[in-house]
Amino acid sequence: MLLSGLPSLPWIWGAAGLLAVVASAGIGVLVGPVHISPGAVLQALVGGAVDPGQANILWALRFPRVVLGLLVGGMLAVAGAAYQGVFRNPLADPYLLGAAAGANLGATLAISVAPGTSVIGVNVVPLAAFAGAAAAVAGAYILGRTVTGLRSNTGLILAGVAIAAFFNSIQQFVQQSQTSSIREVYSWILGRLVTAGWDGVFLVLPYVVLSAGVIFLHRRLLDALMIGEDETTSLGISVQRVRLIVVVAATLGTAAVVAVGGTIAFVGIIVPHTVRLLVGRSYRVVVPLSLLFGAAFLVLADTVARTIVAPGEVPIGVITAFVGAPFFIVVMRSSRAAAL
Amino acid sequence: MSDVTLSGISVSYDRVKVVENLDMHVSSGEWLSLIGPNGAGKTTVLRAIAKLTPFEGDIRLGEQPVTQLGPRDLARVVAMLPQEPQMPSGMTVSQYVLLGRSPHLGYLARESPRDHRIVAEILRRLSLDAMAARPLEHLSGGERQRVAIARALAQQAPVLLIDEPTTSLDVGRQQEVLELVDQLRAEDGLTVIAAMHELTLAGQYADRLALLVAGRLVAIGPPAEILTEPAISEHYRARVRVVPLNGAGNAVVPVRR
Image (cartoon, rainbow over all chains, first blue to last red; front, side):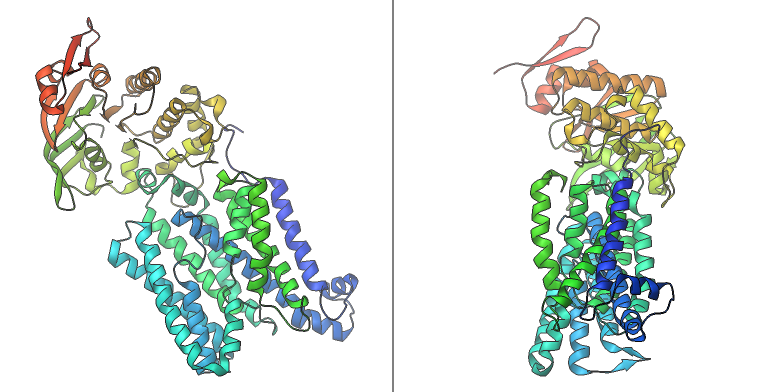
């Protein structure tokens, strides 16, 4: 190699990420109220003869839930990394521009006003959540542009804060005035992976592929943004264009996974920062590893969420924060905090 | 495209004019230093040439108005070295210098082996090859300035804008940096426009000095004509002696009142 010191994904970390995904998926598939042996899982995967009851549990419940967990976790972590990159703000998460507030409002309205409705065979709640998230971020972007002309990040972030507060106030008003659905709304907000078959997976898959793909292609440009807006501009890179494309991609992906999983907290902050602390800050490393470790982390969190108080479920957002925050503090203490 | 012409340049911040009706021509391969007291508009002029701030008037690189150049085209002609380049911790020297290749890359393209070769050559030329893998936060002030120059060189732009290159460097490092810029200018035929605080050094390295005061061009010419005791005491409100250095320019020495 001609140049030393260039960031590249260390193969050992890439392998560790893949291993984490496989291991977490294995655990997610094996753990549940009905015992299913690893042999039976493998048989089911290769189309061998399996007990029909077990096959049904695997194909209708556990496989789709694990795959959905991988998609949601990977997407939230990659979107978090992307937001932190374009806003050069370590506290940025996928909900920075109001995606969570918008999704919560959409879902609350759907649950309270039109419970059980479906549109062309799809439950209306995820659709409303998706629309709410997209509308909130679009609103923040337009507001930010009219106020500051997008010359500064701060204007856009403040617009996001304002939009989120506004949407939250409406959401809380609707929630308070519809007490019969308050429990369902609350559990949606804290996050939960829907379990009914493959609908959720098919709903989010195209968005996750598109969004993560676009962010993946922007790794070099996200690195370039690290030197600040003026200097990046003087290198001939249109900061506003990079920001718009990455924000749109990250928001689409976030809106899609939030629609099926609820507004699961902390994944988008904890996973990318853990990768930075352990492996390095370049987005050539942070983006792919966030995808893998975010996916693994969420499947594990979901497995805990559905077993810890079985047969009930703890909202997954509670687990991601309860387990993730202390883990993050341990990583932070044992590595160089300067890497943040 | 390596001579720079400014005609009737004005820049306003919040309706206050910080640069007013500036006319200036910098020839290809020339080193022009902008001097003047704090707030004179030196940095603003550099930022206008790099299109980092909106301006009225006309700025041309060769025959080409900068307003007609897209960001990538402009960055292939003009490289800007800011006063305090941001050096993100965790980024290595070679990664940072490789950023200078951005203007030569398509939007989503990755750096090619040729870009790597160019950067390796620049690192070698600036004696930075031994620290290629070192994180930026481990560099000294002088090393950081050299690394920043390396990034600007990687742009392979014929016009180099430098904002206060010697701030926070000791006198040895100041000379080292200016000698390096001068050597690169000679070897690569660069046009250099630098904002300078340190008047003695400004006079020693530039072909011409442009004295800006409150956004206006007060005088422009060879250092010996500009660095005079009456001019400096009037515009800087300083008491100085200008001491000839036997053919090595003049030293501007502050004298205690």
